[in-house]
Image 1: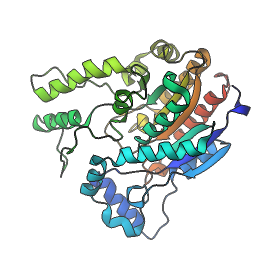
Image 2: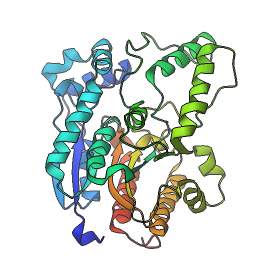
Image 3: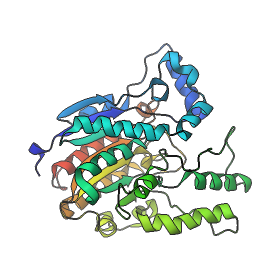
Length: 355
């Protein structure tokens, strides 16, 4: 389908409930300062989309947004935001996005620029209603956002107790071991049947098995989950695979061939932390070293080629996980523009040899 009949509808989503104490302190400091607030990611990047329709911003309560109102700063405490997430706040916001976008999109192609990655679930759920079970999901991310919170907490305690990682001040396990948030939403999408098993691929992730086999039940439980669930339900094209491949084009076509079939609808979600600590720093999570700018550009070209060769249709996309307070300080937005322009070219069906 040509570009003239497929309109792009762009919007921003500044939902940011991160409870990390350092980020909360910086939010408070920024809002209380006398200077102007940084521009939000959507306002900075919308022009790169050349969108046919602009929908503005998803409504988000001030205290869980990237830029809280001064009157709400007293709510910005780690325990408050942890409780918000544990009691289903991210699930609530994903549901809000699903309804909000569905009522505005018509038959256009959604393009979301935002913060918390859990919102991607709302967009995928909305598009599942439009395209059915054939919908595939590609996620470019340094993390695999499909590990249940209980397993995460068990693994963290194991790491703290064995000296593999320092325990952050005030760290506590989540009271809800099945909580939905930015690190678990892919597990939810598969388990609820929104995306069939095997129709989600994660590209650029750090290896999911950093541990040797252990008799400790917490480490063993994590590795068992990797063997039993991740390998059975997700396609992974890891950072190591990308860096060691002589042909990134060939690697993607080989690993994703069953997903990128002729005329198949595909949603692509790009987490900016895939370049963290290497190409950029303006993202919320800096715990994993991502790809450098040169490799990111190779990956973008390879994705264009994969869509062009396969004939798959890009029916929606997002670019997420900006740290709105720091993204303007380095190359984060410049790289995001390259990502967005490439995704627009893919949606328009451009020849990957052009531009």
